[in-house]
Image: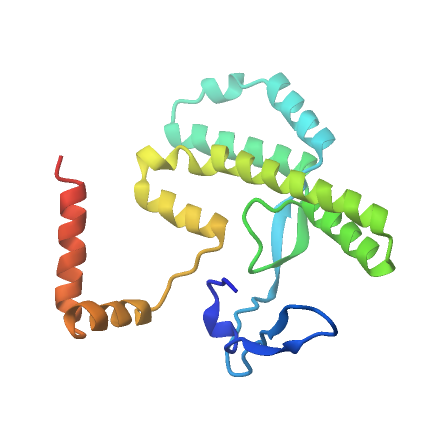
Length: 213
């Protein structure tokens, strides 16, 4: 059994054959002492994402007369006028809504995706195999589309402009968490008798060699 969450489980136990099977059973139990990060529900404020309202907002901005702003002499007055005008249009067309979210939600998850998951789970619990299979395929397709769209929009440009934020966003998308130093301690024990300083120097030299040219 392969997992990157080995601390969450006990060691697998090999059990006798089940019935007339030629294969033995393997039992893998969740660890009773492991602390699993489950996250929590939170309440956030967000703008309405209704497509019709967005179209009306775009039309209102297109038809807006900006002549009074251009006639102003002070830069500060122009900024204030622009900010107040756009904010008032946003408040009129795209209302602020209070929604419930979860701290473990991926940044590309949308309300449409949540509704699809909800319908899929209902189909599974009700035993409707045909509907569950159909919705499962839709969830998988939408997952790929949302991930790709988010990466192109938010992550792709950071690779050249800001590598640090690029890595941070990639880890957020993939669900990677910061790891403790325990794996490094074990590596130092095997290679340098537990000397972390020697291990870090070896890692540093490796990256120097990679970037030498």
